[in-house]
Length: 267
Ligand SMILES: [Zn+2]
Ligand SMILES: [Zn+2]
Image (tube, rainbow, N blue to C red; front, side, top):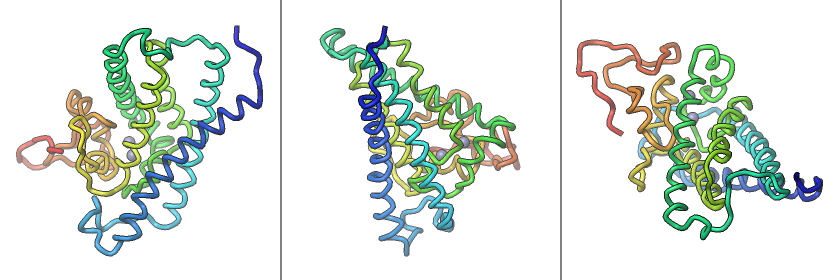
């Protein structure tokens, strides 16, 4: 049985969850926007993944609105879940590290990242099926040259799919609450940087460079992964040289062109 619903406590938790996600978007996104799109707009060849292409001002404003709105929806859902847990909803999430020890806490944090990343790959790949792509995922692919604010600029249904994929492991495996917060914040920050449109190499060995997801926006149906490139390697959906990709080339593997070497692009 849950403790009685307290609308004020619920509203406070929801507002804090919304504010957390939206603040991360505007602080991290604002940093890249200012540092590159404002201060270094004159020499895009030096820093931009796609130096010839910029979003139109109205597209940028649309992306800002859509990303903020989706993060507000995300805050509503995660705030409601946190409120329910505080009122006694039973989940495997635990609060005292000593309950399972540090080795478990650290290993399960890595496991959570791998699980959420895998679920993100498969749901993203599903969204690239013709009908889902046309009616839902196309919203996110309107932005060929991405900016940090494109990160959650997507159809709300798509955002809910990713949100569900992210929450799913929490109901199955015990994770320390701090691991959950750390992994979710990391994924959001990573995705903002990944959509920055700025050529960036990763300092962390398991992450790809920003050109990996940038190529997804240029070529559409390849490079479906998020943090890890493992899933694309596993399924052969990593972009290859000498293949034609495009909005109308579905399936994730492109179309062979010419008889050159059919090798995977090295990121
Ligand atoms: Zn996509
Ligand atoms: Zn994207």
